Length: 265
Image (cartoon, rainbow, N blue to C red; front, side, top):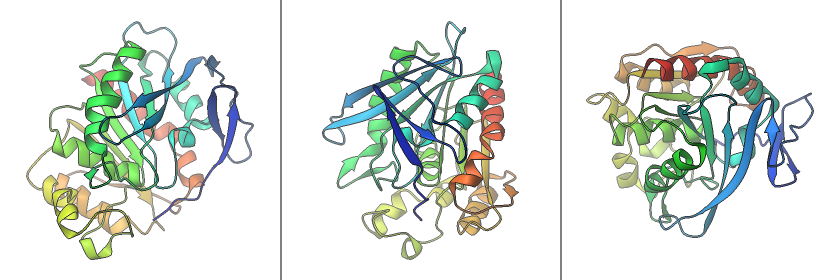
């Protein structure tokens, strides 16, 4: 399901997305909410062409942990670089991770498929480049995302067990069968089967720290409940739907999870 687009505001070399009722974050290639925000591109051999990245580095830490945050369908790297996210990051203080927001295209669902090996792109290009540029701690890496990105985070972590300290799915786009999936989410039934996160979760634990949440009116509630049950974790449910207002209202919850999990790695 495609989340509603947020309003993008390009400022100098960095695009930032304004939260509802909040002014845009003027980042440039400089500081925002105490963090350094930069934009760069990866010439991806796995997906073809140039892929934009936005990276945020908190002040102070010499070797911060890294959070890889994946956007939803129809979004882009700038989708979550807004005032609420940056405020939640700043509130973590010394626990704040560096964050990279990669470009996953319109509907890649962050997995290897016919039109691009998006899983390998994240694992072999996005993460190594972010670790280098942000001078982050390669032993403390978390991955999370919203909707399509929440699915992608669990898919990548389940396919690469032991690589991440923590995994978070926020309104994760999880379906029970290939026939239920949104058009374009998978190549075919075989592609879905290779990336069936619920089936994989029954026999694998992707990371020590796991999180799933969604609004009580979200159409992905059944899939997320099935994934939580397969993982043996509690799914958090708050009022709301599959929409930007819901996610922006819970950035603080998300970032507290990642900060605590990465500190425990």
